[in-house]
View 1 (cartoon, rainbow, N blue to C red):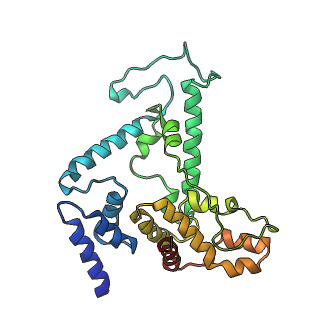
View 2: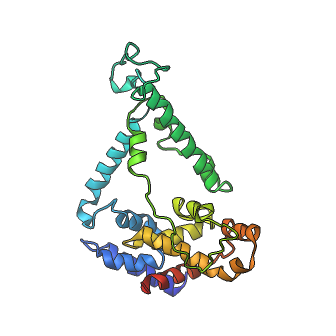
View 3: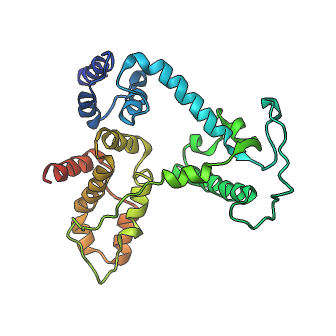
Length: 275
């Protein structure tokens, strides 16, 4: 471990040991990358994403509350209507007189049950596709796998939660790369939709994705900065895009050639500073 890296770790530790975390200082440090040693990245992400408050004294109680809330969400996640967990002391609810699996009513709990499980199935597929070469994404997690897979768990509001927390990101309307190329008809949704919705997680190797996320989470306008990162990606391959035809350009955009994410982040920061 280099002396510079040790110094960065010490800088993070100094910030994180204060009774009240200096958020701006933490953001400044995190923007340039967070060390993974000693659980620093995990802790910094929790603070940057407002999972933990800035006051250290309340972390223990907040963590307990958050974990209980998470368990509550899980208990709401998969219910076969009319069934409750026997070990929770909840009696079976007979709803077949008013509701049943073939009920076409949009308000039917069975209808919601089937639709929500379609969402869960799609999430499972997306997670497996994310990094198919890494076994972590292909196996069930130790916790809370059994709780999630138990068909007797209460399930009411997953679809509403998904709808309420859907990322509403704007499209890259302005073409900062200077490539208008109307004849090729390369629309942003052909490539930018995946870049934005998956936070670039399929464009780079996982360690590089995590490095990008360090900067995204450290920025107050993190999703605006994501747009600038995407614009920087276009600018850095601008000459290739101008020279290529539709097929070549689509291959470039869907299999991005630059692997130095620090170069991309530096260009995005230049764009941000020039605004």
